[in-house]
Length: 171
Image 1 (cartoon, rainbow, N blue to C red):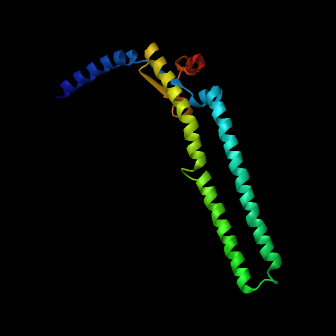
Image 2 (image 1 turned 60 degrees about the vertical axis):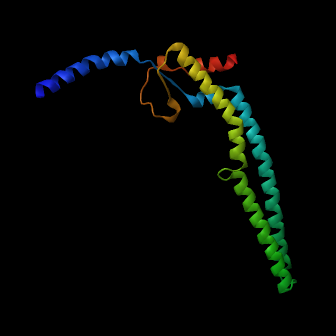
Image 3 (image 1 turned 90 degrees about the vertical axis):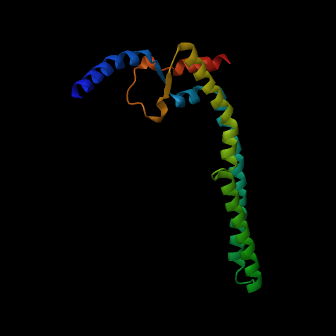
C-alpha cells in the first residue's frame, strides 16, 4: 500500500506542473479602473450633486427644529403648561421627521444607496463585459481583483488593468 501511495504521489507531482502551466491567470485593479473610467466619474459627480441636495434639505429641517427649540426656551416662562406641551409635541414631531428623513436618505437601502446602485450598476456591467471579452480573446482562465488586497504577489505582466481600460475607451 505504501508503494502504491508513492507511485500515485509521483504521478500527481509529475502531472501537476504541466496542468498549472496551461492555466492563464490575470488580475485587475478595480479601484484603478473606476478612478480612471470617465463614466464612473460622471456617475460619482451626479451622486454627489444628489447628496448635496439632501444635505441642504436636512439642514433646513434641522434649522426648523432648532428654531422651534429656541422659541420654546425663550417663551417658556410666558407659555401656559398646555401651550408649552403642545409646542414640545410639535418639536418632537419635527425631530422624528428629521430623523426619518435621515434614515430614508442615508440609511441602509435609503435614497442615496438606491441612487448609487442605479448609477453604478450599468457601469459595473460594462466593466465586467470588458473583462469577459478580454479574457475570452486572450485566453485567460481566471482574472482576479487586486483591489481587495487578497493577492499577495503577482508579476506585473499579469496585470490587465490597462487592457480593460483601453477596451472601455473603445465603447
